[in-house]
Amino acid sequence: MAIKDFFTHDDRFDRFCWHPFTFELVGLAYAFFTIILIAFNLSEFADFKSMMALRVFYIEATVAAFLIYFIRPTRFMLLLRVIIQMVFLSWWYPDTYELNRILPNLDHLFAACEQAVFSCQPSLLFSEYVPWGWFSELMCLGYVSYFPLMTLLLLYYFFRRYDEFPMAAFVMLASFFAYYLIFIFLPVTGPQFYYLAVGTDNIAQGIFPNIGDWFLTHSERMAAPGWSDGFFYHLLDITHDAGERPTAAFPSSHVGITTVVLLLARRTHCRWLTLVVLPFYVLMCLSTVYIYAHYAIDAIAGLLTGVLFYYAALRAHRFIALHNNKFI
Image (cartoon, rainbow, N blue to C red; front, side, top):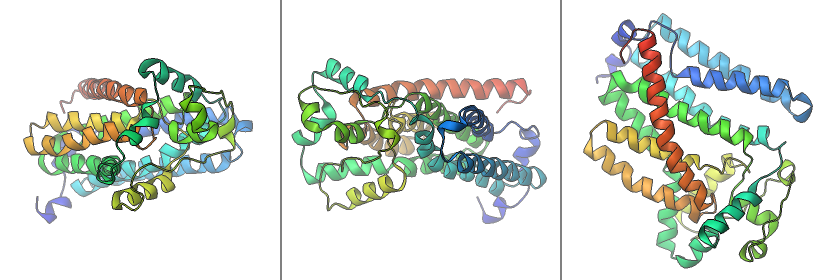
């Protein structure tokens, strides 16, 4: 694609995008839903004005980007619309903590379930059985590959399968917001927060106390295990410090979204793309447990829901397209 093609008229607009259905709709629906949720629980949120203001800003930015594309449809503007949505995801994720911390924590139930399934706590033991620095770096690499993998996948669709680019964006964003909805109503923080709150001695003995509303006022987490001087370990620390909150453990959206990325890669029938994504996918499934981010049952649930959300989003996209007499 030549540079001038980015700024010339997008013929896809004439064929498909005359109606307001876009991948932004899932984000807008989520924004309006959470606005209603906050409005009915104002007394529970000390900073509800900022929460509302940020949602208004998101709606304004999303609508403005779409209207600019509608007035001057270019490939660049379509790409920019997707970039805006992806950037906002880094804000929507920690926002689930602001919404769910008013509910009692459920980690004691999930840690107990983990114990019942595996007769141990895999997250607590994994790094002890595999303590090597090089393995730690592989785990950290796998975890921090999250957004780079999504970026690679979306850019591949944009440059090589342009007509399917909005579909790929829709599937990915719909999957994200499906996870965020779960996280709002299922306050599970994962081992890195829960283990620290109750003590690893209790965890090792199979004692999982109910800590109620502890995370209403606490957000301290355990440091990740492994080689603390490693390059990817430092990258992991930076990403955790920037956006990690005691939220969003079950199911693992890292595993789930990477599952969606892998399935979208396979859909292209591009062998090199699938072969690039696959090893990082395996690392992601392992690393979420290794670095204390998730219980093993979270990772398994992430895999299963990733497959479910992928096919559900594809069907939803196809249904809306057919409803508007458009075949995308």
